[in-house]
Image (cartoon, rainbow over all chains, first blue to last red; front, side, top):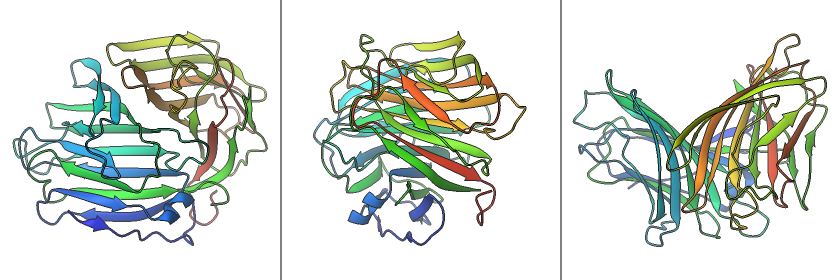
Length: 187
Length: 171
């Protein structure tokens, strides 16, 4: 799994700063972004992924700080599949898992897109949990899903890393992962 | 297109109104990124965030929501803002909701103002995810006054951004 160095420059203009990106040139299992202390200089983080799994039925696992055994994650989701709407949740999970990704079962070159808004990842007051907004979509010319999700990570600790791994097998060539920082005033 | 920070407000005590004034008019789009919870007891259901601005007339709010069990589509007349996106006072004190508001045509005089929002919270067994829009008539938005049911709890934060079409000026 590649660990991506943070490359954004504080001198860059504007609020949204690219911090790191990786594009898969061959199938690989996952990617982790280590957050340096300087990431506290960003009020929000945004993580964007374009995904395709090599293994049919596989999806992705999303987690912070390598925390994969504590049951600290829960989520609530809303999904449309072109015919029906549904909503559900998962509680006390070891990480967020989601399966709305195309795979080798689907036509080539179809990827899903995922945007995670990590609002206030470094809260200064007390020790609140983190609340992450996720929206995604994929369309397969006759099937597909789109949806919204809110994720809670109940760990009152400094956020130091973000990782996305495949639940089985590898992500496909052409998968892209990008982390942005969003600066507020005086940052 | 570029995004620029305009202002940020954090509540240090229970606060009824979070107000941004003298909002610059040289962007094409405003975005408010909200980290919040309210003091009202809504029986565990989410709390709305209502916006007002000088000279406006609120018309409608629409909502598409997932509660973890059912899907909800609703509308409310006579208000401008979101529906059900931050936790109420019954939530664990460490749980805040995240909400993103987009005011796409905020500075265009003579056009109705349309707000889009996306937000929610999760309480490990309950929670909501919400997506919706809202409509108001009125002049260009130069102030924004955010309220919620009851008051904002201490530790809430709203960051306001301008999004423009030019890297050089933000205009």
